[in-house]
Length: 423
Image (tube, rainbow, N blue to C red; front, side, top):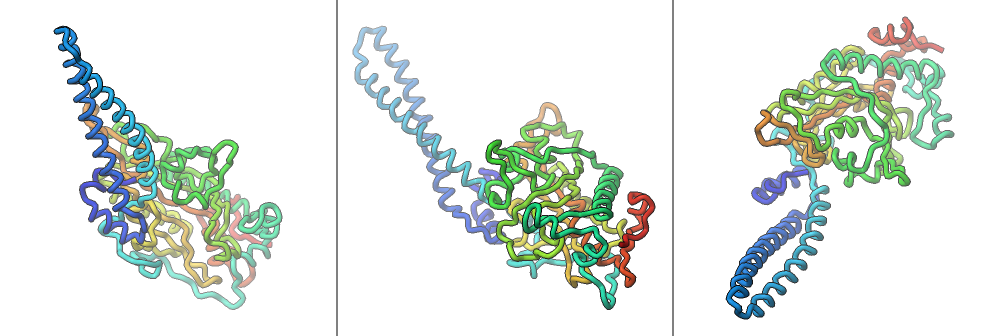
């Protein structure tokens, strides 16, 4: 969440940030409630001070055997008013805390302003995109022909948006996870195995709740959410903690299945592996010093693109414009690969800097030195990578006119020496 002091002291900056993100939050109403809260706090402090003085005056009058009735009556009125204020402050505090969770992060000044994906900026690209050959099949057709993607079984088991990978498809998925984790460990990330169900507090901490509640899967009996990404448990491992600054940056990586209802996207990209409700992903998370977080963002994106280069997959890095960024991001890069049979780019990773937005929600802080005041860390995360669209790209990019699919060389050892997927 945003720093309440920033909202109060520089509302014009916040308004501009909200405008750039296309947010409709009523900042004036929020500020009015905040002003009311501060006025009531001041009033109750004054009343308590007067009550203390009156108590001392009553003691003096009693020692002198003088009547203190009028002062006692004034004290009672003050006490009654303090009770009224305390009740109103409790309600105001809850309302302000709830409203604050709906204020998006402000975009970094360097983020390009834009209102739609067409305003995103291509920052760099790598590799040559091959021309499709006659008879090239989209990944769902070549996958079914090879017997490695079973769309019908997924739909039968769980409904639209679920997929079964069989045989070499399942092996390819497992090989990708193992390769990605191994590479990220070499890049200095600590491998972590995380729970796939997390508490409501964790989801609030990383800003999936309350804004994205409709996209989340909830086990109501236990009030636990299936993770939409391993970012949630990885970041919340440090919820409420004060870290030794000598540990920063913290670099974590984890595999997890991810669960997203995609509530607003029915009818979009429903064919094949492009948009599914359950998918596997390897995630990278960083906790960093505030002054170095943008350097860490660049290195995070490089760590993600290293996966694509090792897989020999051409890609481009897109810097998202302000209105295409997520609710919590201050700056974001998307990594996209090209699926030649589909003739379109597919997002396989988002690398974001949240600055202290998540850290304030999850109360994650650090101390530069043992005797210094704690500061909020900056949090970053990036997919390294999401598997369904990587698999789709490999199947389309590496298929041959004979119907076989070449296995990226770096994956051959993970697939027992197999160089091709074939029927």
